Image (cartoon, rainbow, N blue to C red; front, side, top):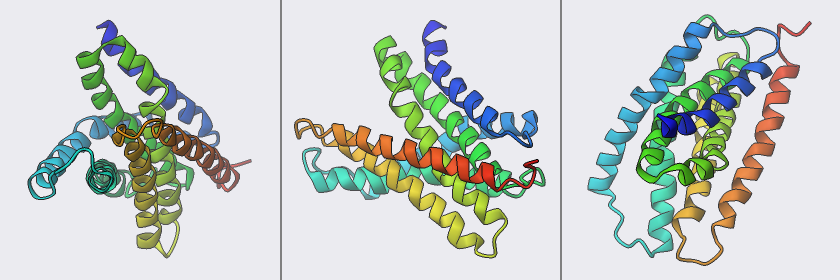
Amino acid sequence: MQLVLMALAPVFIIIFYIYLKDKYEKEPKRLLIISFLLGAIVSIIITTLLYSFFNLYVPLQDKFSVWEQFKQAFFVVGFSEELSKYLIVLLFAQRHKEFNEPFDGIVYAVMVSMGFAATENIMYVLQSGPTTALLRAFSAIPAHATFGILMGYYMGKAKFSDNKLILNLAGLGLAILFHGAYDFFLFIEFIPGIWVGAFVSLFIGIMLSRKAIKRHQQVSVFKP
């Protein structure tokens, strides 16, 4: 139970942070919980199915090949995980009447992302212990949050734009880009010191996420 709590603590800290940033018109808690659970269950199922497909048709042939790890990071892991989250936001949250301002894209995308991250983190932490919980609390969990914020920023804009398809796909593409970059530098651990690139990409993602939050706060239709 202690390990599960350690795995979930950073997830709920991020959720609380985003909830506070939704200053002007809070989303119904029921929809937030549903989005979280969809991310924790349905998104994991979709990702697992996509992994099975890619492992069959695009297997990792040489773990010491930079190109092979590039494909795994961007076209297998990044694509599969972010597509699974994107589909939930697109087909559930974005269509809901409560999705009534651009900032809601960030809220719902983060809720789905944190649901996914919660399940993933519990599995990793139960397998590897408290050290992994601590490391992931400052790396993988905030990384998933930034992917969600960047995706949600564009999906929030898409809801109220005539260019829905382009903006929605921009959100998906940006999330895949940052997810792929983060994982790629970790996957090529056989190159000494290259892992630093993962934290550089995470730092850039965090900076962009902060700007995305501020921009949607500024254009909120509910801002007094």
